[in-house]
Image 1 (cartoon, rainbow, N blue to C red):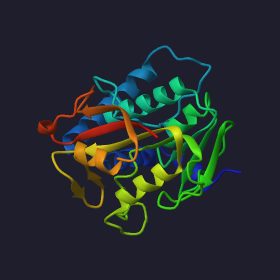
Image 2: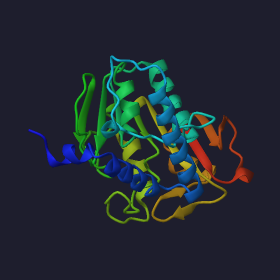
Image 3: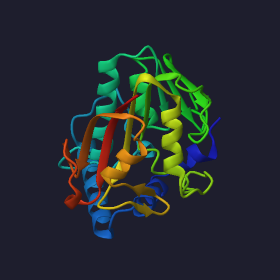
Length: 257
């Protein structure tokens, strides 16, 4: 039985109206939207006129435009690219029996779990399961683990958000400091902790997005641990040097207990 939605999709005029509406609902400028629409429909017309591949159907109702993907370079946020690669490399090199993560990117943890059994901890449940990956509901300010019980732990791009209410958490101006205490509490002797936070010329709260930290303050709040490595991301470069003059960036820190 055909649904009304499927029937409407077969009306070419309505399909074109939907495509135009969805395009102009996006974040790009009007000129760019118009230009990319013209390119899309031009490509569609050309594709229909080349030698057809009769193994596939080509119908107006099945148009599925992705019109902003023609870019000169691969569109990728350098911070997530660098910090996720850095964290995965660290875990792979140290080969823990099990890794624990609090609040980091789920896609990164899914990949890591395929070579190291991984437990994710978050206040928001993971909506699916995967072999090698388990989930425990927990709050970074009150982790459900004993003192000194975790040998391999990460929290990438997380502690700067705690207490700002962005993700529905209670407002707490000391959320980051309390998070650090909990991470330090559950880390085992000889254990490894991998964290990343925004860095800047000063300690700044960019309400309600995140906080940014001076390097010396990061080392101060993690003073109970030993710094094993630090890396910094400024723009599209990663370096081992913190440069206050460059302003906002991202600091990656490997601590040991």
